[in-house]
Image 1 (spheres, rainbow, N blue to C red):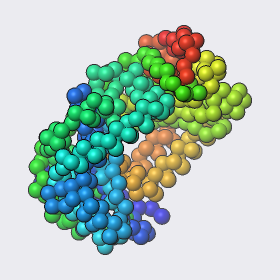
Image 2: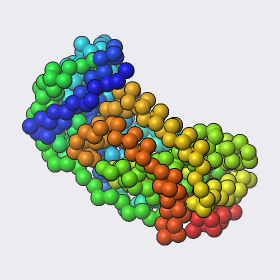
Image 3: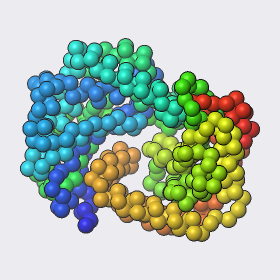
Image 4: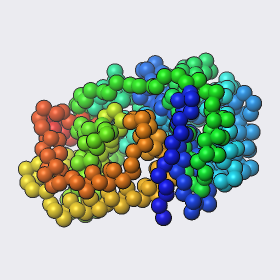
Length: 426
């Protein structure tokens, strides 16, 4: 079963409405994406996008939080939201006949949130608990330190989505209202739906709900410079050393220059038969978890290798990773491994076309990054065109001494592991 190509309408205020018709589905998935996240925050406001997302459900001009929840749940709808580096999104999923009501509900949350002061005090405690949970997790801390190593503290790309505890405790109701007023504007909003829907009625519902939203100006951020370096944090009570290391990769771009990096990452570390897992986990027992991914964002990309290893094995783990990278840069690319990785990525991309949430987020990202919807088959065509020579060139570039590596080590970090990381990847 294939969905029809996404259809796009742009309102007079600049807001975009996207519909992806999936007539075989019994439910509709509706999302409102706002181009604002931790990338759009100053250091003083770091974490505010996440707080605004939490507080958006706590009351509007006409509904309190109990009514917001009841209005959705009496229709059987599932409500959710998330904050990312480059966007915030609100979601509803339910019956097709209730789509107009869903559009109006999310519009009320996005346009009319009142951020009640008493609810803010309660929600601070919830987010503080979430912060503490993250701060106790070596993996989460490792990735936060990794971002800091990649981009430093002066660019928001190097700061965490959740922000700082000091900021969370300091944000006032006025801060939230001011931030939403400046960031939640029509030129930064995509309202998207997937399911058994008709395009024209959906656009009319979006126009009725969002047509008066102020246009604003696009929320744009300069791309960060790649810095590299080593960050470590010893964490009491941890019996593992969490390692994250990575290299600069291309950002999301219209020519899909990042595709060879994605294929190289899958070749190295996706699946139990990949060299990373086969060598480090299966043959040498150096880690219970290891993976390699290419994280491609609108402003920057990262080629990332991660692993959780016993402190006694941390040096050997780092040495083995460096050896695998060198092996791929100095030798020929294994033809069987390359086709295995290509097939894995092809299946993943095709499965994404069957998943409403993935399609909606891809459509929003295309509109925010390129100003238009792109052919979803385009990426697959680029993937098929990547050669072994292209992938080999990726590994050569990764080990270019002029391109610094970013490394984070957390948990139980032996001093010799830090020294080995510096020696191997300096």
